[in-house]
Image 1 (cartoon, rainbow, N blue to C red):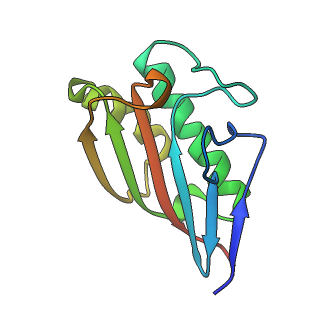
Image 2: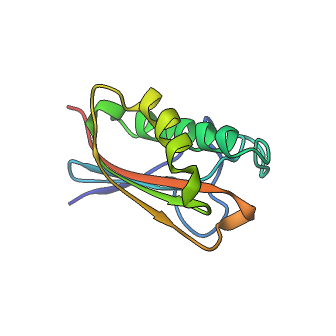
Length: 128
């Protein structure tokens, strides 16, 4: 099986020793994305909704750069620092995943890198 690294400037660079994504066979594995603005190492704002939108946008950019699309995402894992933001996250998430609804897990965590409030990662099927 061939492994290839996915790297795009349309999403933030990895902030540690990992790749934005890895394509393996017919699968694309996207690393956890927080609400960092591309080209910076800064969160887009301290607001949960802003961070959630940016994290999902970063995820989308990596998925597309890796040769797939959000309609091919099979699984999403979500990490929230405050589970009471679950409803707000769902509203934002639905704008990215409306007709197609991947399998998903949402868990509350004590903390995330850079003081982020939300992190998302996914697995997608590669197109073609």
